[in-house]
Image 1 (cartoon, rainbow, N blue to C red):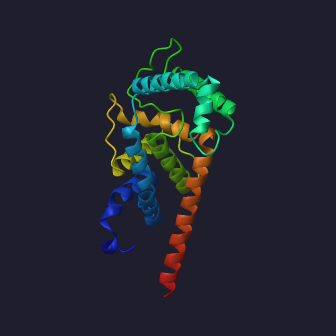
Image 2 (cartoon, one colour):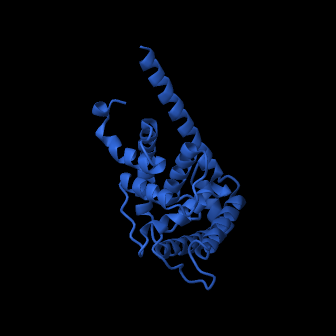
Image 3 (cartoon, rainbow, N blue to C red):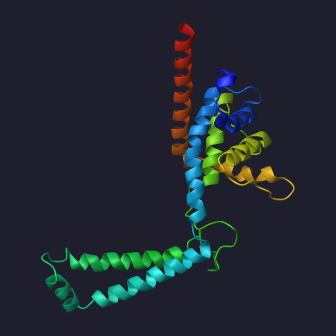
Length: 231
């Protein structure tokens, strides 16, 4: 791509690509990181609206108590008779309805003490993290994207303790609008945990999807430039 024609919005992602490649990066990689940026930006905004663990436990308690009241209120058959009579159609499988409500009540009870929200002692799990079942956080997503980009470029996986891989993840996080991380004397150590998780088998499906995007981006770039050179 002609440097004079290169859009300015690519500059932060070219910088990320340069960290990954340790040298002049291919423009297609910067373009793909820019495209992925919208997913990371979206997940980051969703994460900001999530409640705290304490708030989630309170919400689940409210759900449990509300379901208990509804289940008890629907227990007498005459209540269901009037509910049936108030509409043209009868309640579909009223007994199953009660079972479903009881199941939700039990799930709400169990969720309050899940390892994602509470300690073994039953108190709210400490730490600044938001309430989220173990899975894909925005930081984990960022680490996976960098992990796959690194592997595609170098044909080898980055080491979880790689300072340069952590630097690329931090650079990409900030390019997507995230705030810088400042934890202790080594801020990049924050990414070691997420890079290690990015390499785990549990996120293989996510990595496969990002890898597909990378392969197609490189092929598309090659095709476009082959046509331009031929013309």
